Length: 147
Image 1 (tube, rainbow, N blue to C red):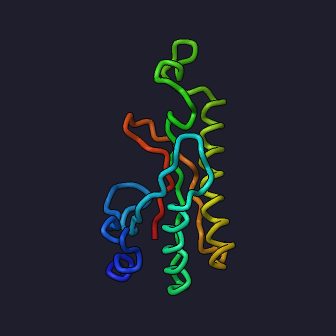
Image 2 (image 1 turned 90 degrees about the horizontal axis):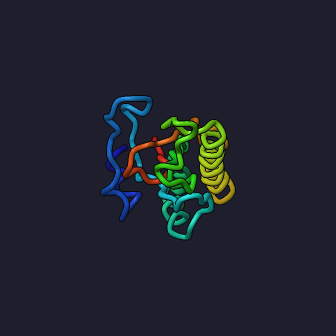
Image 3 (image 1 turned 180 degrees about the vertical axis):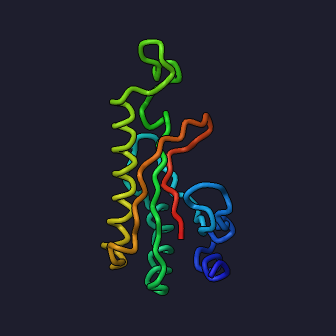
């Protein structure tokens, strides 16, 4: 399966790796993430081209399901490091967290809707994760895809 995916996702195939990390996705095949500009949820032409390869793989292999998992970052909230603080706290406010998760959900839904509308992929084969907030300094807004 891994060899097939590497071939099918050329030139992205070299970026496919077996997810051997800890956590919910251990043992899954981790595809190249869909990277977003901060605050954006629309698909670019480049993202659509990449998702087209995924759509084709899913058409060719009807038993493959894909998990779609969004990660938002401080950049998505248009915040500077110091403005994340409220009342002396280093944590995000509930409003900021809600905004972040809403954006992550929009990104996941956009990808899912694209695969359904363009490739007629069954809704049940596209599984959405709960959006997560990635607080690492070098984190990029993204949606990770797992088979």
